[in-house]
Image (cartoon, rainbow, N blue to C red; front, side, top):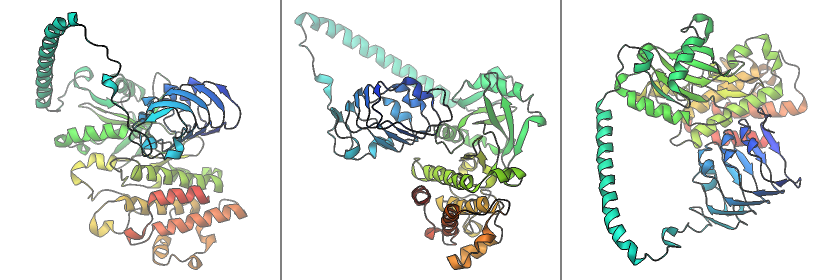
Length: 474
């Protein structure tokens, strides 16, 4: 089971499976839906479940699972739906969105669950439970030891405050020097070792390793000694405002915690006098724009293209509605959508525009790519979630058509009625004719895309609605 690393969906319900949930299941990092309901599983939920970083839906109902629910669930930020009803679980509910949003029906039938969830009893403060009477002979010890401990804790507190104050005084300015002394990193890996490996793997950013260029920097492919491959964006020098470094680092820390199967994982940031680097997971097939422009586009059949559109919608819905605070991408285009070996979509560069222009809040002159920008951006310079919705509409049409829809965007945004749409004009002629099922799905997508292109931002649907409609209808 642990070897099926590319598994996305797993349904083992109603199979009379017994014993414990195998810890190796935590290795399925791409798994998004797991259903183990209506079996005879027992024992505790393994903490290794935290490794299911792409998991969105989990059903463990109607088993004999016991013990406490692992706090590891609090690290699973992509998990949105969970059902643990009818087990023998007990103790506090983890503080995660999936559990906070769970209804009583999804939690009932357990031994003794508690927490700040509607329908459950609040957890009791049992700090005084089970205490034995203090023997008289111990009172003198307490009188002597407690004041000493209090004095030591106060001393350590003063030392800690002093060290923090000293660190705050030191500005994050980095002077020219060697890697050992001048490297600053925020990462899910050893920043110094990673930086040195990247320099070695790219031969100090030799152009032969460059796989793309954008508005904020060039992207390089780096194969590390661990056999892992990463994509490294080397930022252009002016892109980081030294006055806003602390805000920048805080934003990077936030973005490294984002986990969703359709979002390229930001692994971290390295800063050195010579280079400033954003390190991402490497997605094999590259950007959607390049693939659509090549003969390889013929491999993207109608079902695959529909799945690409759904992946982009799910990712944007997660960014807009499941992240706190919400993340607006600001630059959704076919150049920022990468496809993996299975042609599944992954949004890249999420948050980068905001990272590099922190002083501009939600107003940015430079945000966005021509041809994907919402019309209101031209006169308000305001970037909101509805800006991303408009860009998604363009992307959806581009995927179906096989190229950017161009002037058709204007006619669709002004006259979106179905009778004004000629289906043949919206399709990629390189693909075979639509089957009856494919035709229905493609028409539904075109309708949704057209709604996204509405000139009035308030009339555009939200990405949550779009994501739900795509999941239910298609």
